[in-house]
Length: 58
Image 1 (tube, rainbow, N blue to C red):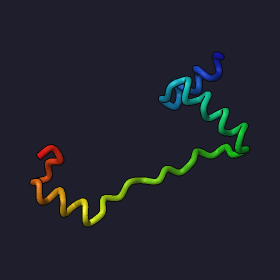
Image 2: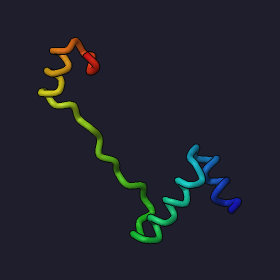
Image 3: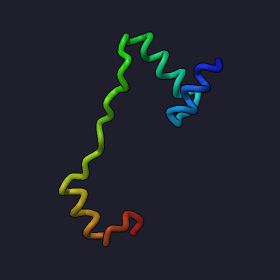
Image 4: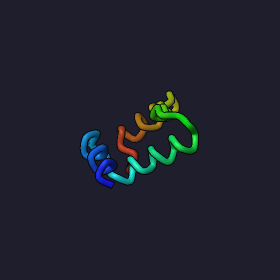
């Protein structure tokens, strides 16, 4: 659809992403984008990175 393509180009995402948004809105009734839960690096992970010099491949 032309409208899906126009939205995708306007917001800088793929047409598939717009279709996914539409399906989610239809399923959940919510129009807002879901809030993503970020990843927080724990003190334990920082310590481990420090032990290998910050290189996870070491």
